[in-house]
Image 1 (tube, rainbow, N blue to C red):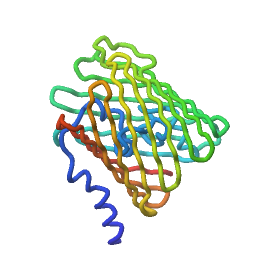
Image 2: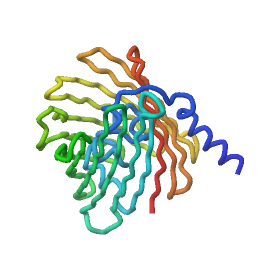
Image 3: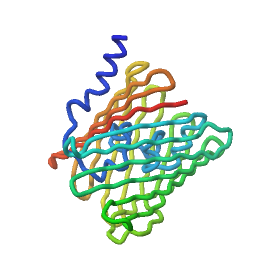
Length: 277
């Protein structure tokens, strides 16, 4: 019991120490898990981040049902985010699906995100996914934004995976340019005790280029450490991330993630609980 309490405290430590300022837009695409590796998750996405980083990751849950509950803070405690995700992949059918809801509240800004995702697993080496997003910007009853993301994953042997995704591949009702069409590509090495990922992303409207890398180490049977680095090439901005995870058996886990955007005094923190059944 004392050991479990110590592990749980260690997992929440990033939350207690670093829950401060943040970049609001970046938080919308992250889970606590992916934030810990700086978002370098295009070829590894296997939780609620799949809905935004790579829809093909929904099928990485094959054989299980998943429920994720997450909350976080941006800039200050009264700037909050909260959401939940459900994925049903416990079927012999290669087609899997899931739902995600996230709400974000900041001074003068309110966003509600609703997502429906589908993914298919082909021959155990190839996944294809698509996610439909519906976003309410909170300014009027007609203020809705629609978008469609697509993604794929390819598994090469037991350890190497490739991922590619196109955000806002189809979009509508976006006169303000709220959505940027963005392409992401990544490669990762995956082992039971070690995962390493590298991603590159490019925004067609913003012209933003970002290079991301992250590492995940299983320190013990229950405790996981994560760290990552992100570099915005056009703006020459650096960001570092750290995260931790506790996994109890095959049914429950707790993740935390914190990211520091250097020189801008912006921070993001997220914490989430995961259930597999």
